[in-house]
Image 1 (cartoon, rainbow, N blue to C red):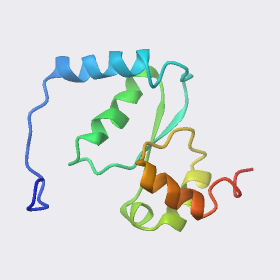
Image 2: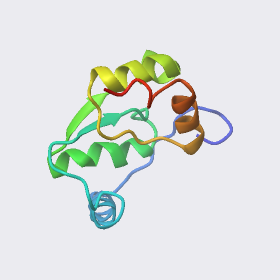
Image 3: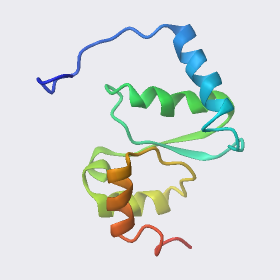
Image 4: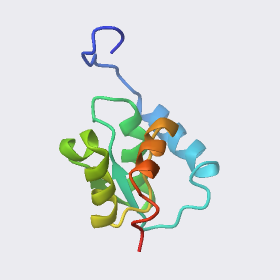
Length: 108
């Protein structure tokens, strides 16, 4: 979006998405198990959502995080537990906020 804050359309080729899937499967997702519950917490207009969406190709369940949960750290922690999420893709700064909100203390 650059400095405007407005999403701009970008074409992503199918082979690029498949290359991303293969690369992630060999590295970041190497130990992932089929059927994991994966959050889709990036806005669909943001390219990071592709990384989350392609996980359905490996047998994972996608759980859409509502806007209100993405905007409120406490609500996101509640959503993580309510949806029994196994995977949440986030930045280190966002992870710190989740930990400060008690993410680990609330795990059952």
